[in-house]
Length: 188
Image 1 (cartoon, one colour):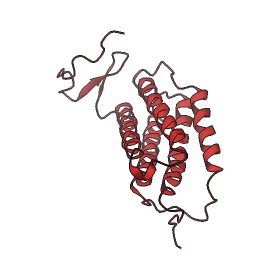
Image 2 (cartoon, helix red, strand yellow):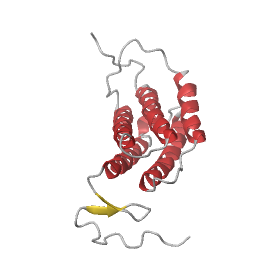
Image 3 (tube, rainbow, N blue to C red):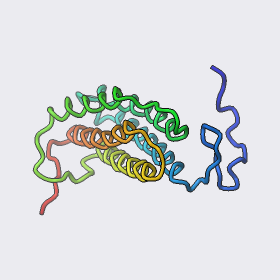
């Protein structure tokens, strides 16, 4: 494979515009670029969460390998999401990617006790970062939905992004239990 990212600073965006994968120039404040940026931020937030999984408190975490594997798969898929957003005529997200996330959610949720109220984030650092990734996933989804109200976005892309916040909620609950099974919940 040829080197694709050899020149990082080009100056081409200094005027507030950028180029999509199809060559079209758009404003950096466009809905499409906002959505691409939110997806990129989600990928970075997942990276921070994955880095915390390597901490001592998570070393013996039973589902750690499953969580890490899904995170790496999602991070890779998010480059496909970004590619699809940057090249609107192409579709890179498949129903299989969504099914993988759904399978993870179902399988892992079965290991958790039912919730009576909303969970208060912050049981430990790892869980807090999973909650942060959940929130960023929701924002990325909202940005892509906003884009879809004005331009073409594949249905599968919307469904995939919707599932991610659910997956990170499950991960937050799982990793929160590595320190204590006492899960702080909202008190009415």
